[in-house]
Image (tube, rainbow, N blue to C red; front, side, top):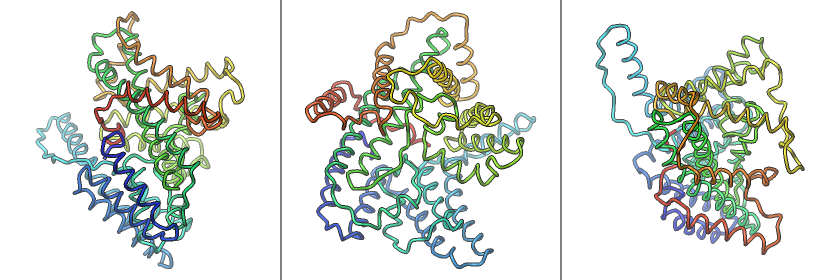
Length: 474
């Protein structure tokens, strides 16, 4: 079920009403309701893949129970079962055909005839997200960072919690699981804040992202007829399309969770106001960036190893992150390029130099901060070309047109550019808040004027073709 579908408001109203009708001390009944609702939410897309979520949840629940108190050898074997189940399912559904096609291309490049079979595999929505979420549970138990839960309803509800099931945030058990084991009492202020954040997320998705989508599609498909300015506009618009699409989903997910008394982690923190690539990756898809940091980069040795080893750790982490996004060499190159961006900062020990909010307490940034933001944004745009392109040849050809000698353009993208400027303005003035449209600091009449204005923009300019969120394919 899509957040931007006609069915979702009806589904949400029913679940919301039933949830709060149950007494607050009936925790297991509420968890059962959320579990059933989450399975309905996911099964609305394709009920057959519910078996994958169920099996992944069951395996990790049982593994988690048996890791404590086991011998060192058995603990490793149990963790291996969890890794095999989760990564095996992810690898088969997401990467089987990619590896077959890549191997066939390699054989053909060596002069051999290759007719290797591929399968008609449907990628289960959200498999990259919920497998990482449940996998982190068993890894944390193995590391003795958390204790396993014996409450199977709470655990299954944690894995399949419908607001963040198919596109995150990727929650850790130590943060989200305990919330399924306590009483929740209705908080009108929290619910109002959740509804406000949902409205903001819907605006970003249906007004900005979905209206930019057809422009971006046309510009990337017809790049050979464009000038340098035209191709630059294409990737500029894509940068805001993917940001508004994905952060819009996160806002709706976080806001929906607030309606039920749950707190999900922040997933985006105004990444396009970053002053270097290190800050960008602390602000973009935060739940995934921290996941790779904790479960790949640090286990490899992190920054506590010699310089060459640190470079290797960075390259591996970013490349794997790129590969996580999809079975295409463009994603691998995108991850590798971001790793190369990051290495100079690491070598100069400046990867954490910007941990504050840019221009905090001021209306405008300094010239130095403004220049740093523009340079970082330009670097991100170059990387986005590889993320959006169909293949590496397409990406390099597109970049070639971006840096061509002609920069004249007759494109009619003024509307798309205007939407991005509106977004930048709102988020700049709200950058010290958890999300851009947090207008809780204003008086009630002013707040309702904002609500009405944003609602009218969604109603009149929203693209309600129920298009999927971009990150569903990952």
